[in-house]
Figure (cartoon, rainbow, N blue to C red):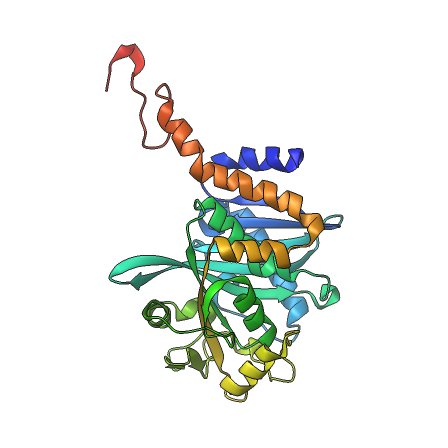
Length: 325
């Protein structure tokens, strides 16, 4: 706890997140926010190459051309990359690439965290990486933003992922769980995502969108073609209700996806910590979350009360030479 706390406390001065955390035995997880802006070109190229190594193991016969794989800084300027590597060798084994997108909601811009592309080296599947890839970064961003509820989105045809998102986050639609309903906010955000951000998840302009069901039809036409799966091949969830939902709602021959909209909030964070995170990883994760929450909740007050130094836009009460402001 002490070592993790000290490391994350040092990270509080970072304008964007670039943190490494030992999430389980033999594995380290790196979270990099806005790498297209925060990393030098050589470091950015090295990060993209690590992502491509995982992609090549996952799809050895195919290549992806959209989003993060382009290597273009502007495409990576709104991304948050979570990369899991072997601790001893440094070999990358899995990643998740989130995107932070702006979508209109009730006439005002709203920030949505799109859960993005997840890839896992086939050699390490089944080693319990899902809790890192599908929830850790969203939780870190939630803590860093002062525990304010945040909208998330997810595009998938994989029943296991549909279930993971439905179980982890709050107010998710579409979902087969009792009480799932499409609010006007869900509809507005879905419309905005489809109108402005198809390139984030590799869906072409010719793809259709069934608003009532929040299903993208003929989705694999914008650079993500290699990700298209049959229902038989798509990984299943342990709860059959999600498998039945996907089989009923999606046309796999055509290539349909669900566009899920939900929120990460305190209730969802509690469920995630209690049900998804292995008990051995909880101390480090609690330390990390506490440090990030400290950055947003406590440090601004400390900065405000200290009138002797400048912090961002705050200026000291007295300048050099004793002049008052």
